[in-house]
Amino acid sequence: MEDIIIELKNVHKAFGSRKILKGMNLQVRRGETMVILGPSGTGKSVSLKHITGLLEPDSGDCYIFGKKISGAPEKEKSAIRAKMGVLFQSGALINWLTVYENVALPLREHKLANGSDLDKAVMQKLKWLDLIPAKDTLPSDISGGMKKRAGLARALTTNPDIVLYDEPTSGLDPVMSNVINELVIRMKNELGLTSVVVTHDMESAYMIADRISFIYEGQVILCGTVDEIRNSSNPLIQQFIHGKTSGPMILDHS
Amino acid sequence: MNEFIKSIQTYFYNTGYMVMVLLQTIIQSPHAWFKRREILEQMYIAGVGSLFVVSIVSVFTGMIMGLNTGLGLRDFGAEGQIGLLLTIVLTREMAPFMTSLILAASVGSSMAAEIGTMKVSEEIDALEVMSIDPIRYLVLPRIIGFSLMVPILCVYSSVLGILGGAIVGTFQLGIDYRSYLQDVFERLTSVPGLKDLYVGIFKGYIFGIIISTISCSQGLQTTQGAIGVGKTTRKAVVLSFLMVIFSGYVLTALFFN
Image (cartoon, rainbow over all chains, first blue to last red; front, side):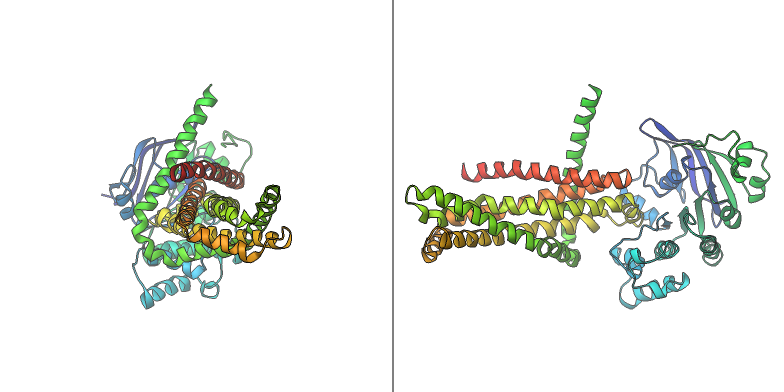
């Protein structure tokens, strides 16, 4: 049996009268990179927030490592989140801490390491992500690409099993986008991480995905390999991957 | 009608949220020792950062009050009493009141804006995902640091206000500064004078808790990006002003009625 470690079962979520998720189903296997693809405003980031337990579904359930995170008490959520790292769209670095201090933050706050052990763990992650020269710099003084890498370094500090990426290449130039894409692949290959990547960057999705879930109007309409998505006859998917302005897709979901 | 019911619901939700933030901070307070560096930092931000404006406002308030009361009392030949009057008014009411309003407008607003910006830029989400409690990490040092600094600034403000009164008394009203300071000293060492001072310090502490709790909880509830941060900041200042005035009256009635 396949080792499913992330599962969303028939998740519904609305904000006021706006229904975002309308029966979202998703299964992510251990060690794979699942890309959640779809137009803006269709519930990609909301799905990610359900996986982290930051949002509670109106109905349906979310399971991580077979444990229900939706509706779980904060203590249980914390235990599940300890195995998770998240790279937020903007990096979400604490703005008064240097890059080094940001990366050290989870270790310091949970007293997982101190002194030379902490320094060793932090420097290792900074080295992986080529951030040593920027380690004493504040987030406001580094580029967008560096912020993403610093955010990724922080997400990896506690050696998680799952890493969630929210639009890791948005706002970056093509070269920096590829640097991030290569990092995602490297993290998977070297550390055996399970990754969920939310994006609408087709090139990035083709490059990093083992499987792609295409979301439209709060539901997965197709989940398959890169080739399966690429060769799908679904007009919605074809319109999206070719960036056509005419087709069945409702362009403004907001 | 629906709008009215909605605004009542929002009011109760906001009040409940603020109480919850304060209760969670109290529950987290045993961790204060581990956050001592951050608490000292917040004390520095609230104290040193506001020292200039508190000094100017306090000295001039003392001068204005001294001049007004002195000129009024001169008709009765009692202008020599302004030292006593200013000591009572400043230590008991004006210093905590002025200091709190200044700090609500300067430090409280920046607290709400800072946490609000962190909320909309997903930094608070990032903390939660790392299982770092935002109350312990962000709110606890701010509430403790701020509420400890307000009483200190209240005493400082009282001293400067009294000195402002002395300047006006000596140079404009022709009062002997030694008798002015003698009155101040006698009042402050008497039982009612000490009570004024203690109540003023206590008020400052309570106002500090109120302002920082309102500012932090408003910040944590921020939505809608930059517009939301602006709204949050304004709401935090307005609510702080209202609550300081209201609780100031309650505390005065409680201690002096």
